[in-house]
Amino acid sequence: MKLSALLPLALASVALAIEMDFTNTTSINAGLALLAKGLMDYYNGNDTGQTPGMFSNPYYWWEAGAAWGSMIDYWYYTNDTKYNDIVKSSLLFQIGPNWDYMPENQTTTEGNDDQGFWGVTVMAAAEKNFDEPGDGMPSWTYLAQAVFNTMAARWDTTYCNGGLRWQIYTWNNGYNYKNAVANGCLFNLAARLARYTQNSSYVDWAEKVWDWVVEVKFIPTDSDAWPVYDGGSIESSCNDTSVLEWTYNSGLYLSGAAFMYNHTGDEKWLNRTQHIWARAKVFFEDSTLIMYEAACQPSNQCNNDQRSFKGIFSRFLGLTSMMAPTLSDEIQQYLAATTPGILSSCSGGTDGHTCGLDWTQGKWDGKYGLGEQMCGLEGLQNRLVWTRSPPLTETTGGTSKSNGTAGTVTKKQTTHNELNIETKDKAGAGIITAVLLLVMLVTAWWMIF
Ligand SMILES: *[C@@H]1O[C@H](CO)[C@@H](O)[C@H](O)[C@H]1NC(C)=O
Ligand SMILES: *[C@@H]1O[C@H](CO)[C@@H](O)[C@H](O)[C@H]1NC(C)=O
Ligand SMILES: *[C@@H]1O[C@H](CO)[C@@H](O)[C@H](O)[C@H]1NC(C)=O
Ligand SMILES: *[C@@H]1O[C@H](CO)[C@@H](O)[C@H](O)[C@H]1NC(C)=O
Ligand SMILES: *[C@@H]1O[C@H](CO)[C@@H](O)[C@H](O)[C@H]1NC(C)=O
Ligand SMILES: *[C@@H]1O[C@H](CO)[C@@H](O)[C@H](O)[C@H]1NC(C)=O
Ligand SMILES: *[C@@H]1O[C@H](CO)[C@@H](O)[C@H](O)[C@H]1NC(C)=O
Ligand SMILES: *[C@@H]1O[C@H](CO)[C@@H](O)[C@H](O)[C@H]1NC(C)=O
Ligand SMILES: *[C@@H]1O[C@H](CO)[C@@H](O)[C@H](O)[C@H]1NC(C)=O
Image 1 (spheres, rainbow, N blue to C red):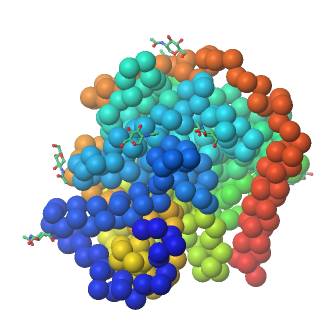
Image 2 (cartoon, helix red, strand yellow):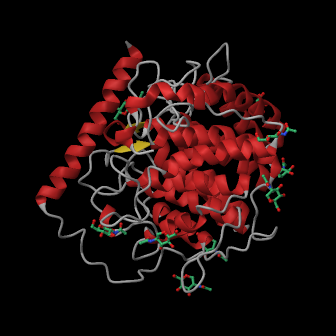
Image 3 (cartoon, rainbow, N blue to C red):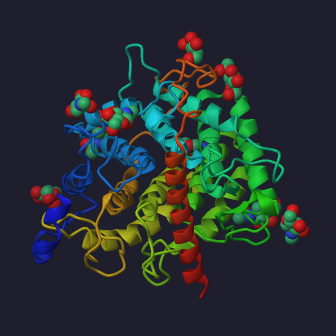
């Protein structure tokens, strides 16, 4: 689907709506193939003048990282290898000179969460034995460890007694903000690396990040259902909490805790998983149990980033099902209840399989984009978790080799990009983040009033 061609023929969509019979593998694969094709239609990184690994405007670099994760799962659940070469070459094109997902083009704007989501994707590649880079290139696990190590090195005890800041670079707004997503990526990677590599340092890190997030009350634990709040500023010792709740933040901690439970067998982690899940049910409409992005969908304020969150959340729900099987029946029940909403929504555009944002309308809502398409695909394919092996580890068949020092050694003299950033670039990056922050505040205002 090309964006420009989308709207005029919207009416044609009804006849082409996807039908999927979840008891019939042929039917499931046919439906998922259409949604995956819809997602890849937003990719033009292989065209002349475009950048491999990046999706078309206006999608930020981080979302490309997340989208490749959706495509790895697509391959895993359907066995359709059609896009694997593009996924692999994209993941490798963006690794950056130090093999840690800090490519030079992103160095004015990259945040911890941006880097973190590429890390989460290559972690999944390792856990699923996705075709290894090979030939002098780092392994998927190496890349995940490099992301983890570079993020962990930014742990900051000067303010709020610990935690990662949202932003990496001082000139970006959000540098003074510590938040759930940056720390959630670190936590999720620590938990999964602990299980994959059996290196106990990662267990210690997962404990440390979790304890801190609870200490600053981004996850308040004084009730039965634990929300994951957005974050707080260093000027206020992180206690001026923004109480926005995003699906993907809940998912980062939910699945991270489930991985910790699976790895350690410690009931405390099952308990934490259960408490987060108890609250995550707010992301499903009361009567129908159809998933929605509660913080922005009802007010019609979801930005491009936020439109992808339900997809990332769905992926984390799939992982949680597998890592804490006692929760699987209930989680899968919620995903199954969401399915009719997704199928009726993913019936838009000229191609008839363009997904909308709001799944509760019983039809396409006229919205479209990379995020919407990821959400549709992930929301459906994570019902298939039990058709394939759960995430592998280095001792249960995972072939991707770990390397604990990944990311701690400078591989190449960097070009002093960071030092020579021109004032106009700084201002540009500052303005972008200022606008984002404003959008966030306006959204918060909408929620409250
Ligand atoms: C399964 O789905 C395929 C494709 O939609 C269809 O052709 C086939 O008849 C279905 N099989 C059964 C047993 O329903
Ligand atoms: C994909 O391949 C695996 C391994 O051969 C098999 O177990 C699984 O059933 C296949 N899935 C589909 C959807 O064909
Ligand atoms: C374009 O995609 C193919 C995979 O189909 C990949 O092998 C190739 O490296 C890509 N080209 C560029 C410039 O990334
Ligand atoms: C960086 O940007 C330049 C100019 O757009 C592009 O040619 C190059 O491929 C990009 N590199 C990466 C790793 O994104
Ligand atoms: C929040 O932090 C500020 C700044 O450190 C401090 O003055 C204030 O007492 C704190 N409030 C609470 C409720 O802890
Ligand atoms: C978690 O553990 C606490 C303390 O042991 C207990 O009171 C609570 O009921 C447990 N929660 C769940 C969901 O099992
Ligand atoms: C860990 O995950 C595996 C795979 O889903 C499952 O068989 C096992 O029961 C899980 N362990 C625990 C303690 O739930
Ligand atoms: C275990 O992980 C720690 C922390 O990342 C790292 O420093 C150490 O080298 C790793 N050990 C091994 C044997 O890989
Ligand atoms: C691990 O990674 C470091 C840093 O890239 C590298 O110097 C070292 O050779 C690697 N070790 C192995 C066993 O590949």
